[in-house]
Amino acid sequence: MSRHRLFSWLRDWSDADLRGTLRGIYLAPVAGAPMEAVATARAVTGEGLAGDRYALGTGHWRATDGCQVTLITLEDMQAAQRTAGLSFSQGEHRRNLVVEGIPVAAYRDRHVRIGEARLRFHRLRPPCGYLERMVGGGAMKALAHRGGIGLTVVEGGTMKVGDPVIVKPTPARR
Image (cartoon, rainbow, N blue to C red; front, side, top):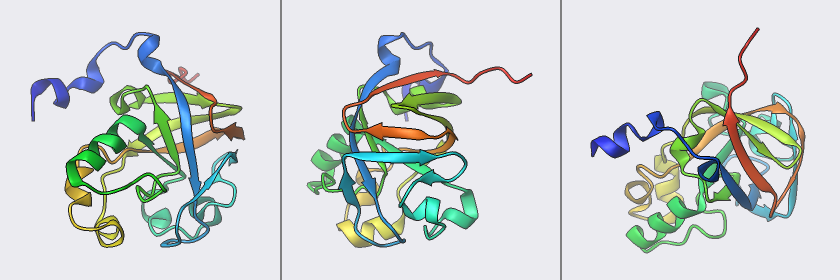
């Protein structure tokens, strides 16, 4: 791995680097259920997206790492599709949000505003063996450094496809 990629999260980001667009919202009511594309979603503080497996407590990883919302960049998803020759366009990526225009490293240790909701970076989300079984061989390798991130909901609110996405530094604690 190159030094540039390994330490990319340390760089200073311009305002343009920290602005993007929400291109997709996907929900599943339980672990393993197909992801359903929706036009709007309501983020619930401390829980996740209303109607999604993580907010409902029915997500596979909910108990072990407290994941509330997952995000993948459109650019990383498209690169993974080209690499593996697989489709991730109908929610097969298993992430809740697809955002265009902001590098995933820019989210690290920051907050993100999407519509009325404010979320906070939780951790990187590498792909799992379950994804490999669902989508097909090569999915894990294609998403190895493109699996997205997990977020927690700090302020609830509605978000809709097409909303601007703005990444900001985490507010100082008092």
